[in-house]
Length: 106
Image (cartoon, rainbow, N blue to C red; front, side, top):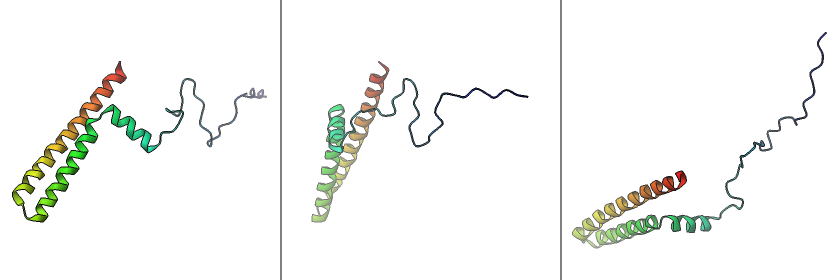
């Protein structure tokens, strides 16, 4: 006849609670950030991205305004400027990602 197995002192699995793992914290920030706080933090980390976004929006808006007024040559120039501003924004994003990756390694 088999002897009964020893009773475990651990609590049974409860799927409604976060499992406790030594050395692991499920939340990164103790206080959740608001949208405004996160926007300000990200802008301070990489200020070139919002500048590029504003430049892109300004070139697009002015280019559409010129197109509406019939100034096709100026509209074409502003659309090319918009493409350059978009390229600047993408480059700023990639540079910011590279810098943050280098900081995390150090």
